[in-house]
Image (cartoon, rainbow, N blue to C red):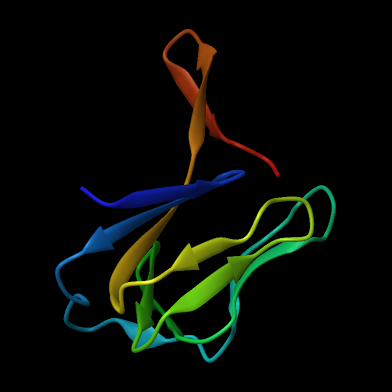
Length: 98
């Protein structure tokens, strides 16, 4: 499985865009809650389906963030974007805040 991590964001290459996913018409993958910095894609389309987020690229692109190294996505395709979670004890988890 091909995957990338940038701070609190996990990027997983998947086979295809799920049917019914809607284009968000933005370049922001995930906005930062604590700093206001955002994970952005240079080129590609961001889609959502319910609470799931996807990125479709047709050419190599770069994921950017002010506080993290850039992530080059060389292979065009579809990626699922997930917020990472951390274990807080007593069977509880929370989103990692970047």
